[in-house]
Length: 201
Length: 251
Image (cartoon, rainbow over all chains, first blue to last red; front, top):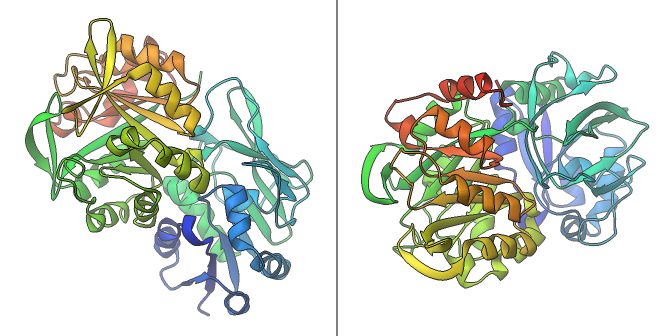
């Protein structure tokens, strides 16, 4: 069966080029479309929340669609990438307090480290429990992070990573919803593996 | 210590990658879409792509060439050249860039940094500083090291950070293309002045030069061009040398 994957369109800031190209690399037959309306949401099997933008602007752009997205996520396998993972939280503080989609309990705060922010670079995952999204990922595999904010959640943790001697949440899972703080579409073979796992889920 | 990124930098004058000395006297060295893939396969942690003539010729960057290059990479891709407005930045992101570089027009109109950071997040906005030494200070240049701006490099680096820039690409115009080493003092001063990552650029002639700007200039990442283009070292050679010097790099 051909899979239909909907990429949530944040409007102006939205950037789906890189995710499309990476998904098509691991699943050439997948059908990818941009989700702009509630009707678009009905037509897809899985959802990806891409990772470019700022929390406040993205939530404002989604406006009324946010409720429909939250509803659809309850039923359909979903992968949130970077900011896309962050907006799955209850609220964020980038450019002011903003309500998120509320799928995961937790908030998104600025990374509390003394060293340079944003965190731009490669880091491995300290995997605390098995997750289908990390099938085949090895201990030495590194992933690319680009973020100034981090996901504060202690209930649905899958892995932690380290920046500036500070541990932050790098992967979360709750039922059929996954969030990754890194960019799988920018993390070489290991990242493509994560996308493949999502396709195979 | 954090892992230092080794970045392959492509200076592009469409349809070719070029390389000169002091950002001038430009020689063709290959095609961007092919060289980007070569460095990706060599193990580059990121690829930077700078259209060197866009702002000089007062034209837009060539999006098709950016898209063509981006389509083959699965590592971060930072692109700049002629970025004037938030719209230009959006177009680059849509063409496959992960980060957008700005210089010439950001100096003339700093609010483009602020507006872009607000829409795309700071992690997407990289300010490119072309620094030339005058006495004991450095001045920012624009249009690929050709035009003086009158701005002090350290002041501008701080201002760019305050406006929301998430990274600085710091090129020493004096050292660029000469392969005699980086301007360590410049890199150190800028690194100490800001709290966002600084990418050192201009002057890599040997792997040791690269290790030195990390060690003594506190660079968070290093952009390399000439020695890669002329086959004098590969990304792996550079990383091997850095590791032997006790510096953390991604294997």
